[in-house]
Length: 436
Image (cartoon, rainbow, N blue to C red; front, side, top):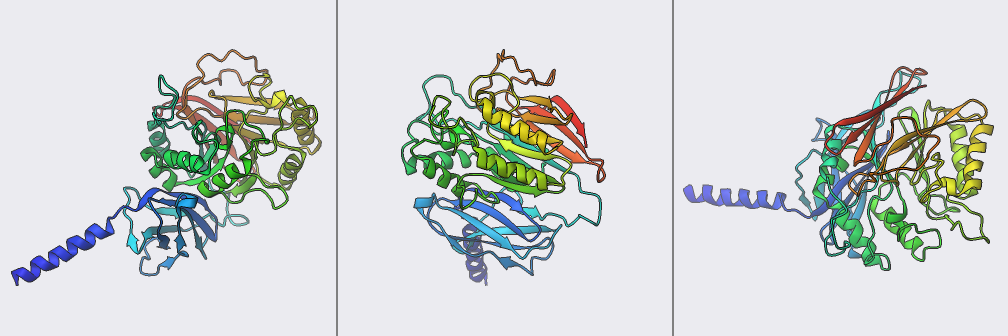
């Protein structure tokens, strides 16, 4: 009898060890979670078969499986798992299964589907965190000297606030000189950044949406002439579970989504960007076609606040670095279109600048447009900003590592936006609000 118990214990231990085998390198990353479908991204350590087992919270005996996906080194062993036939306003739990082994994580795996509230109740309150410029040191490939990245605990501070969604506003990785000219380089940089321990719980706990900027795209300040722009786009698609990526006739990272009662448009500020010195090509960051589609979406929107995400600043009047003010004609075209269409409470959300600020501009028709710049998360902060920006809200300039959280609340047609900036220790450093 004792031998039988000992053998049974060994089998149990063996099964337990197998269940805890670690085949996931990074993730899971929750992308969108709509009323009837959600997407989760995961990266394996090596090639394998992966799927998710999911169920309504408390109903594990009635589980469903996503389709199984085979990973390969050519795509960084990444996979996107689609959770289908969901119900609105519900909590789902799930497991990640690799080669028929359930993977164990130090944080819960669950998500909420979008609620079906319209025509039924007031819109639900929600919070959205945001940030840009995520530099993760790697000594072998960094420039000599003091490390450029730091304060990774800022990601833990975001996670503590339990946002419903996270907006990654560009420079979400920093391609290095060793990465620019090969597929292996792009895969290595994305992989190195994404496996950061401080990212894991945050990216599994809320919806994640991303735009890019130059450091996700290619060399510093790279334009649409970058020789590997198509490869850069392919890599962005591999590593981000966004709702969509451009149009068939307009390849790029352009996308958008509705979150509760607010609309978000995600611009691509790289793929069609021209050099300001190119006299044979219109000076542009977005290009007219992308802008016109943005305007169309804004016109269709019934949202109390309409957000446009872009890697670089639009409203800052200082003609420095890559601000849109260096592209005067296109910037004015955007402002003119917003004015002509009578669009109000349009808010641009940007990164890039290594400092944060709130900008506001009164249009000629009396309507207001705004911009929240949030930068940097872990890269070096600009500590001596002296530029003259005529549209900066007084007192809003932040010159240290930071992130922001935006809360939308209130009854229908009485919505309130509260914006709070936090430093890398999670302390409040600036607050601003706007009524519908």
